[in-house]
Image (cartoon, rainbow, N blue to C red; front, side, top):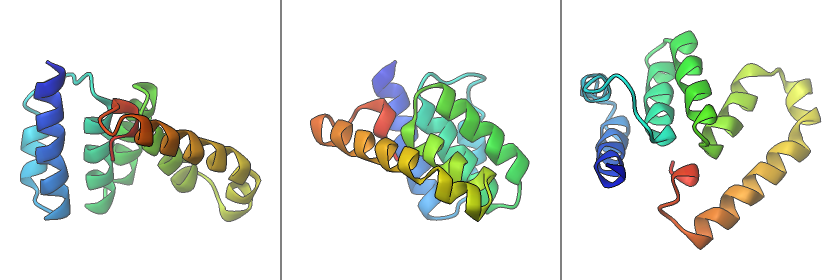
Length: 113
């Protein structure tokens, strides 16, 4: 099942790059995904298409499923500039942890972007 979801993630990523709204239909082929990166990709698309509230909900789900990029993105989107500056050390640590995990295993589901 993990390889199936990884394939779906890669399809979603390509559709996101192309700004193709078929991404939504692919996402809704299932009620629930195990791979947080799928929610992250759909959340970013929803934000791009103007649904910030729905996008943030998807990013929170991705974060809850362990996706590090979604957690970093949420800090950026949910905080004003002053708060982001305060949170910079946290984001730097998260980014370093993401980088280390990505170098160790590029297919680690926590670091898919």
